[in-house]
Image (cartoon, rainbow, N blue to C red):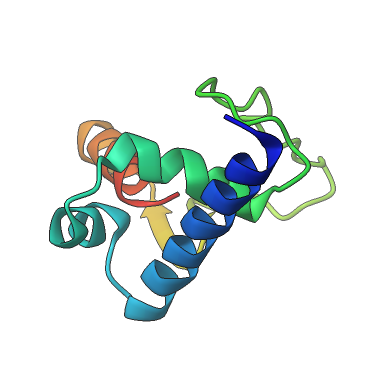
Length: 109
């Protein structure tokens, strides 16, 4: 593929990403409607959101957050994932939480 073709292809996909964001649909729903492979679309979403970052399918290494000992200790924790806040109280069901995180990863970009 020539550099001109590559640039045109990138512009085509970036336009698709913008169109998807305007719909409010999940990536999976939009891809089904547009007959586009979800994995391909996720690649372009990541490339669009981080244009200077090499896109890989490897998970981020920064999965943990340091907590200062000065912070107030509570029996609740709020997990923020994009525009979703999840309040976990002591005794929460770890299996359901794990399934929720897996689902959020699948439907987000």
